[in-house]
Amino acid sequence: GDLLPADGVLIQGNDLKIDESALTGESDHVRKSLDKDPLLLSGTHVMEGSGRMVVTAVGVNSQSGIIFTLLGAAGEDEDEGRDRKGD
Image (tube, rainbow, N blue to C red):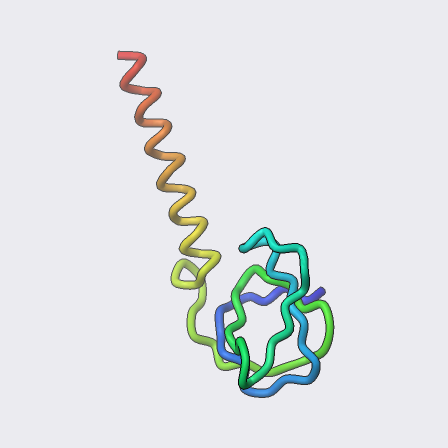
């Protein structure tokens, strides 16, 4: 269950299966290969196999970073709405 710290593209893999439930909600493990579905996303867990990837995005530029940024922005909007109601 290693956590992927960055987004990337698989360049070498051996029977790689990823748990993407943290991002997609899908409970089934996703098989990754060079010719079919080579994209790896931060915040997901390696469940089986091994692989190497070229990192394409980290931090706020990664898929999980974008989601957290959007969730934070939504939370700020809700807080502002509460402040206005109290005026």
